[in-house]
Image (tube, rainbow, N blue to C red):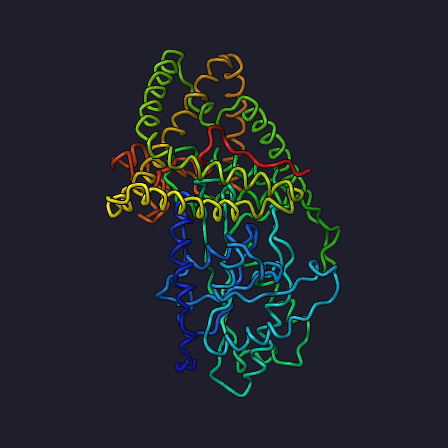
Length: 537
């Protein structure tokens, strides 16, 4: 490996953008968990970072802030050319971070576009030892599945290796990354960023990638990238499958199970892959002419498909009632419900009262972002606009937040030094108290609904859940190989990693954490109602 490569120097604007949005992202998202940082190639190693692309500019900002500066001082980004040259904060942000513009056919009437200068720039950056970020799906999409990957990354690897075919020590890494949003556009939801072991290529070890190249080699490398990215996130053909997979995971590992965000996503993905496989058509014969799948496999598929249908019916009923599965799992007597309603009411009132001064500072920010997002949604259909909602919330929230901070300093000018620290601290504490207040209010409304539903209907649902639980556990343990006792297994196997959900009363630690809310449910956001997924229509 060539040791002289040190990479390009870090522009001050890039350092500023990374610091600023690391702060903003930690406010917008409740928990950002980054896994496998140790596999990131060190500075000076030519590296192409590839990830799934479902949240527009937010994906790039997450990668920039998730890669530690001790590992890589600079991640060169790419963005669609239409984002450049505008008199907007977003355009300035993209250009100041050293982002490279890429032309897309869809932005030029599906006509051929010339990106040869861009590719030349990226190759030169890689030869300096830089890391380049590319999203091989080609565009950001509000969809539950990963789009077929473009072959641009594989062709770039081939071109760089071919340019350095006479350098036996030259190596280039392809580092794939999976980004999983619990609810990508919602305030205080959670994100998992998982890096995978890099694929390393050199002219000496990979002569098949040198020009002239067999296009099958390009397809093969692209397929490997797709497999790695898909293996770390939820990749489904429909929101319905993700919905029932999350319910199956919740029944298997009920609310309160001590799980990290990474463990939770992997359990959901295990169920998701089972439902996907069961619903996918099986060929009559295999590619090498072997016999069709056995009747036993067909029966197993039918059993899983039927389980999925019944899980959907069960979740639909829970959504109509406005309660969680945990309310059905653990029956509560009427006196206990009334007692808890009174307790939650008092607790929610106390938290709202103490957070009110800070919420007055948050109010202009909330209003600004709501208006901006509402106006943006009107510019196009869901599939073409919803992937940029988080980007708009981050941008307008940042600008309006800075205006509130500066205005407070000007108004209290004699005490500006004190106000400059007090205002952000008050806003943060009020946000943390508000999170717990909203959680208490959600519990209050859920308990109230239990009284309205009545015992007979709940008992009927409980019997249905017991049947579903038996079949989910049979699938999880007998077919998918998941641990038989998840509550014990995940409590013992996990460490003290970030994003780990503690048990009751936060594993006997303090109930309230200033840094982040200790969630028992990774689907929780700062909403007064439980989050669901859109219809696939």
